[in-house]
Amino acid sequence: MFTLPAMDTASTGAYDDVRAASRALATEAVHAGRDDLARQGLHAPPIDLSTTYPSYDSRAEAARIDAFATDGADPLGPPVYGRLGNPTVARFETALARLEGTESAVAFASGMAALSAVLLARSAAGLRHVVAVRPLYGCSDHLLTAGLLGTEVTWTDPAGITDALRPDTGLVMVESPANPTLAELDLRAIAHACGSVPLLADNTFATPVLQRPAEQGARMVLHSATKYLGGHGDVLAGVVACDEEFAGRLRQIRFATGGVLHPLAGYLLLRGLSTLPVRVRAASANAAELARRLAADPRVARVRYPRLGGAMIAFEVHGDPHEVISRVRLVTPAVSLGSVDTLIQHPASISHRIVDAEDRRGAGVSDRLLRLSVGLEDVDDLWADLDQALAEPVRTPVPLREAVR
Ligand SMILES: *Cc1c(COP(=O)(O)O)cnc(C)c1O
Image (cartoon, rainbow, N blue to C red; front, top):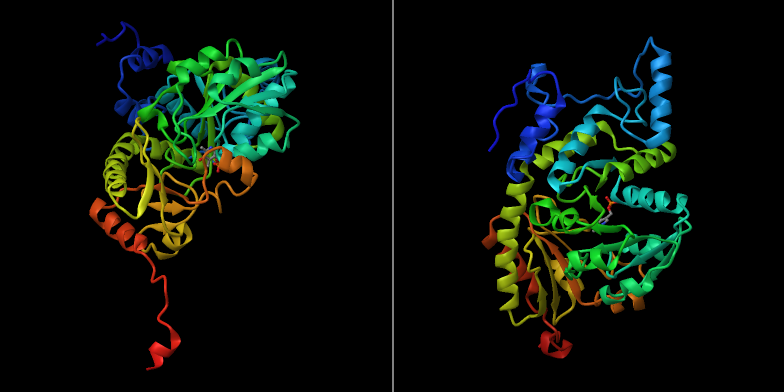
């Protein structure tokens, strides 16, 4: 524990830093990014929808813009323009950085906008080669494979990372547990294999509740905040947690390319973070039980559930996976994940459709694989729905002449 520093607690952020160093994740989830509210006489965080901000001191604004152009540091003093930074979004960024244990975080309009900014920042430094491990989320795979941003990718397994590095390699990218197979990687070993090349770990599936990749050596932690961080299926967002130096580059890219997060989304994400630990734990308990029941079911060929835990299950059925999708009633057949309700989808048809079929199968995404994002419903209700959805269809229709007889 700590003792209060002998100073005016209203005066400085240093007090918050001292206090933050001793706080547990569950406490950070409800307090980080809100430390100033009580002193302002507020309880809920305000939503600042301003696109611009009045200033009678244009010399000071010029200095703030010059400083931002130099290192991308969050401009000190009053905000200038919505694309440069927003106070509500900044609360979410502060909170997520605390949860991931990084210096900073930079939020974007979507997970893909966040990944794009990382790739652009590396390319702008002359480092356009990326080494990546499959499987990744389908669109991340597509962005790298198609080279849409002028990057070049080398796909490898974890053991091949060191050999795949080149002088122009700017990034190593992995997901663990991976979308959609839930394959798990040893992030610490991979960070070691990267040497001085920064490792980007997509932590969307684990969330900082179950795994903090920065503690294992990842320089950047990516989230599709659309998923667990938002947690209610009503916000599209992305975020990169990283050191302040790289955050500066990302803010400059965000300012210049415009993939900013809307302040209302920032508010909803901050609210989502406050229940993240309880949501993840409750959904994980449901998922662990469903994974157990699926594994014991003769209609199910194979179940993948991460050692790490979590609320995602991947499984293969002996029958037709499209039939399972067509029969769910309580569970919603839809892409995406991480909401309070349970979703199921067929990766080969939807989330990973855009990946070349051979590459997809090579990455372990079979045509029979189903991906289940387990929510907060009662586990027996969920099982009852899965049980009826798994029911074998009547394979041989009654021959016509018998039917008319
Ligand atoms: C959904 C997802 C993304 C992309 O995020 P968007 O918010 O949809 O742009 C990236 N990585 C993973 C693991 C995802 O599941």
